[in-house]
Amino acid sequence: MTLPKTDFHVHSFLKPYGHSKYKNNNPMNAYHPASAWYTDKGTKEDFAIENTIGFAPYRQSDLSSCRRSNFRLVVNSLYPVEKGFFDIKDTVMWNSIEKIAGRWLENFITDFGKVYIDEIKSAEFNYFDDLIKQLDHIQALHAKVPINGSSRYEVLNTGQHFDTRELEGNLLIINTIEGAHSFCNGNDPTNATQWEGVEERIKKVKAHPGRPFFVTMAHHFYNGLTSHCESLFAINNFIKGQHYGMKSLVKPPRGAQICDKEITPNGYKVINSLLSTTNGPRIFIDIKHMSAKARYEFYTFRTQNYPELPIIYSHGGCEAFYKEEINLSKTDIVEIAKSGGLIGLEMDQRVMGYDAQHKGRRFDRWYRNAFRRDTRQNELWAEPIWNNMMEVAETCYKAGSDPWKHICIGSDYDGIINPLNEYRTVSETDELLACLHDFLADYWSLKRTVIPKNTGGNPSDIIYQIGYKNTVNFVKEHFK
View 1 (cartoon, rainbow, N blue to C red):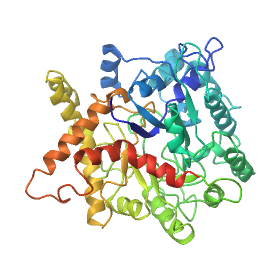
View 2 (view 1 turned 120 degrees about the vertical axis):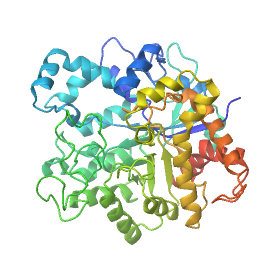
View 3 (view 1 turned 135 degrees about the vertical axis):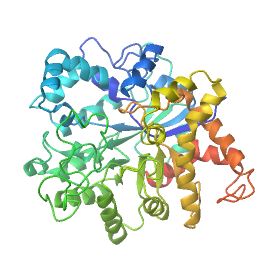
């Protein structure tokens, strides 16, 4: 039996939801691409394409693979796709590509389905309506065995009965949302009128049977709520809009000042409405994608208004290995640990620092590694996760916090990531955890280490915490 596992940030339903827009695809049938149970294994050709363009043209976190790999809990992220992805820069080359192969290329990169892409690009697309449709799409198979299937999932709206639910044997799903633009009543969050009535929309989401646990305040594009980080490095040469509202609203890198704070009045309205318990159960804030300045502003706000609440960083890495503000500084790590929060380690080459470490030599590195024995390849590709894991652990230990309590896996599988080559899908998670176990044993074999030997348990105890127990404990304590 493989280890029990959880994933704190994964998009298992995003591609199936996109494919549900095709009339001949049935979300209730496990053999159809509209189903989250549908398995689409990557081929050698897919892997070659992925190594070239940095996107995975196959499914990484389908529920059948999660089930086979003994995932007990999947924290699924909903995402009404931002229109900014399809706002291409006005250049001769990209205009020509758009005319010749626009939808095919967009679908190839995202695998959302051409029908859904057309829907997103339409003037009528509404982020909040799409959010509700995604919640309903997932809820439709709650506690049901799909056609041509043998397993069920259960959507939890509280973690208080987690142990009982787990014993029943179904795969457990908890929803979250990536991007608070999802509460915008329209598709232009910079338009203040589209934020009117947002409190009622949040109240409606809190009342949904699949209500979310937490929400990232920012995502890839300015949403009228907060400044955000640069995140689309690979395609920023082709799209127009990520730099607007990026890094700072007070002193933006390009353009005029947008606001006198990094979180706008509408942003604080949304935060307070999400965190309130007078309008339904609390929905927590995930700081991923907020700019560094916005994060620090949020830390102050939290301390003054909600000091008992944990800070969540659902997926990402450390600035020590990828020097971009989308990743965590030591100050961020300490703030999260002090709050009793949780940090998810993301399975992305760039975010984990692999690309920076091997800049200009990625293909050469991949080619040489391809001929090494499997165990050595596993170790090489696990190193970025190990490095980030220990940056968090050692920083926490030096700050007087439990070094292991605040770390989990937040893979971001089936988001638009370039996964570590030996850990492309949920199916390889056991191999990753085995490497991390061996690395930790080797670390504690050294004469001098920052974290003394067997602090918090032996290597097996620690890896069990990171791969499973930390997320479960966090859910049981805070998802009420």
